[in-house]
Amino acid sequence: MASDLNTRLSKKTNLFGLQVWELIGIGVGLVILSILCLLSLCLTSLKKKSKKPTNSFPLTQIPTLSKEIKAVEDNITIHMGKEKSYSSESGSFLHPLAFGYGSQSGDEGSSGTVTMYRPFSSSPTTVVRSPLAGLPNVARLGWGYWFTLRELDLATNLFSQENVIGEGGYGVVYRGCLLNGTPVAVKKILNSQGQAEKEFRAEVEAIGHVRHKNLVRLLGYCIEGTHRMLVYEYVNNGSLELWLHGGMGENTHLTWDARMKIMLGTAKGLAYLHEAIEPKVVHRDIKASNILIDENFNAKLSDFGLAKLMDAGKTHVTTRVMGTFGYVAPEYANTGLLNEKSDVYSFGVVLVETITGRDPVDYERPPKQVNVVDWLKMMIGSRRCEEVVDPKIGERPSTRGLKRVLLVALRCVDPDFDNRPKMAQVVRMLESHHYSSHSHRPSS
Image (cartoon, rainbow, N blue to C red; front, side, top):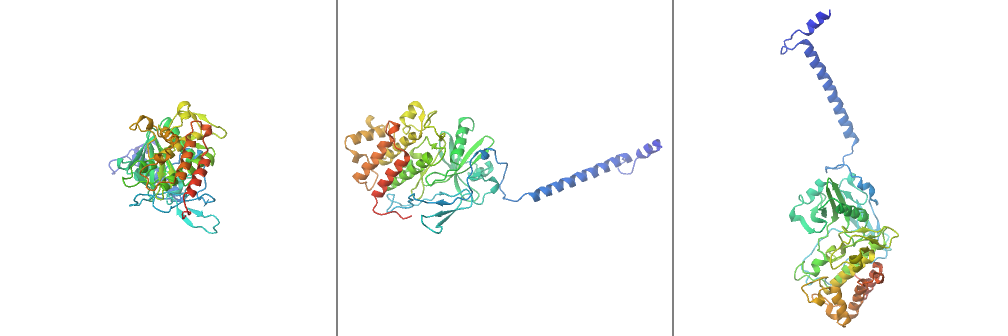
């Protein structure tokens, strides 16, 4: 019987001369393959139904770093409180103001819109669209947005050289435009290993949740492979350095009022970092090129690549000296001793630079004038303070007003850091000068 079965199975058929048992094997295989295909299709269909469509942007898993960062609410209601806001001043800030600039800035939350209330107002006055509106919700971090490398490639035209707007020791900054139309500045870390990565993490953790009108807002970041990038709001009216030293054009000079407004805004942003958040943040690289200016000549303090988080309760730390020559406080340069008073010194140097229009260090000048702080002290000691004002300023300040601002600058650059004021005190002193120099309040 077994012999007959073998004979039948071994019998050749008319189909390509295959034996019966071979045809049976092929048939069973096809049935199994069909079952597997059906199962695969069913699983795929179930997965698609369980997912909610968000957008057509490329998305991958959000890195664990986002879990380490303190999140804030997606929608933030900002009450203007008692802080004075100057969106415009009487008169022109330029000689002449022959052109206009725009910028993308504001105190928006990370998604949706922000409702801004004026003091004692019963109804909202301004609704501002968030720069992150329209981007996929799955990539939101609470305070900002996690960008993919592909999104930033598209935004910056593959990081083309034509999009470069700045370079520093830690990275290159590119101008870009998100798919929702928001202009951004993308800081690409050159060396993603070692210290550069630590500084990147410090930036994200220090300013991801920070919201202040005088600080450049961090919109998000990208961690993909060895790539480390930060995405900021784009402020396109140049920096204080460009305005002071001719980078914005020969006939575009800041007036005294514009300079004081910019320095007051910078002081407010720095005071916020030092005294309004925990842990406090020491910037470590305050300089004219890190003070950006928007279309209303409001200061935006930028570049937290050298930021150092201060542990609560510690009065100072000793660290590797980082900063820009001419702006660094003497105790920091000599010993590595760092606290917020180091930033106060650097701010004082920028204030002197803003008053005089001179670089902090200029070796093309006579020996006694190379260092602008030393030169200023010499001029004041010789009772020649009127001669220190930048000659490019059109209408000069009053002698009384000039002396008050010079006193603020001298206190900030005191060699003994214990004698330097806190930034909140600097704000009050500059505000006092600002109000005394105007006969009426600027419109809001």
